[in-house]
Length: 419
Ligand code: UD1
Image (tube, rainbow, N blue to C red; front, side, top):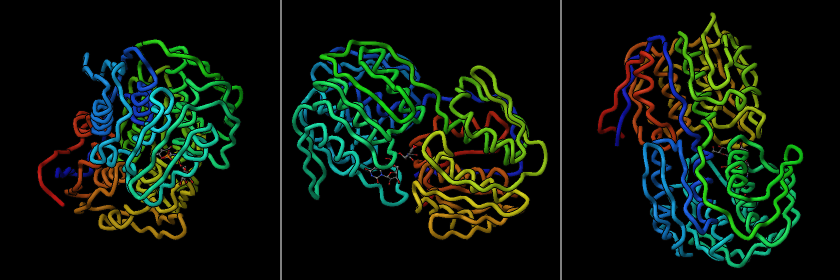
């Protein structure tokens, strides 16, 4: 196990390049199963989740060739509907996308229960409901889930927004017989990036209004080279880091339009934000103001930035209230933040944060990826040395994290060992 050690109290300044989006990369990689000819994917982030997805695809017979930094050629012509290795799929929530992707071309797949960040119950009923509505036979057992059959077009309304179930439905519909109309669908930038990728390969997908997706099945997709979109959660995390530590940072290779809905919240807290064509700049102008925020599907405030925002609000002047109705139990990291001096009360999916804290160095453990970023934020501003054990959980989704922070002037290092 690796541990991140941070000496707090340094301002951040300079530039950081935003990597490809984890949440777009995983469905795009898994959708290679829909192809019968090779596809090349560029701008993949160097994160362990991408490595796990590639290993899983290889185990299903997809030939994976690295063609450059962050670039792979996937040849699915010999893919077979095997039973997934639980050691591979069990570590990756995104492995769920194999259900939709495999049913499209291979006609069947068995998947052990998927893993991923552990921040409470993560049901999959909507995934299974939409696949059943498309005519697939879905069987659930203690071991996992299996799907069988050829998908057919269907009308389906999601009673609540689910990124994962929307992705699975799109993947199953691309090669289905007939038209699929989805309403109540997710419209996160990573979902729209998947749609853009599939369209570039010949899929017929329209997004006529927010939350509606219409897919006309096509017989086959053709090989393409596609560049994964920038990671909006990584960009948002660096904005929040800079607001916490002070200083001024420019994010390059970003997609500012992804973050436009939430930038006013950050400027309202006291950040000066500059928006370029593919860059964003941030500087803190003075004391931070408290916030009242509730997470919501896009264009609402993302649950993946909730832990980082909660940590930041410890530094604001006054009381902040942050609710996460998407994942009400996603506050497991608060007990770790308290070790650094935070005052936060959590009840019923809502954190009440008493601001104005003077955070100090502490020995903490990252419960999951984004929570690890929240602890890093606290460590960057805390007085003295902090350690964050289980750095491997942060590496699941943040590329070159330590190097990027160091290049911005933070005192950070990784060592082996820890909890
Ligand atoms: C969610 C986030 C996504 C984030 C990811 C990892 C939303 C809408 N989704 O995606 O942005 O990147 O976590 O942190 O912000 N649900 C069901 N049944 C299902 C599927 C989901 O009830 O079959 C519920 C979930 O418990 C949750 C909500 O729907 O309350 C949204 O979940 P979903 O979008 O599916 O989760 P992820 O795809 O993991």
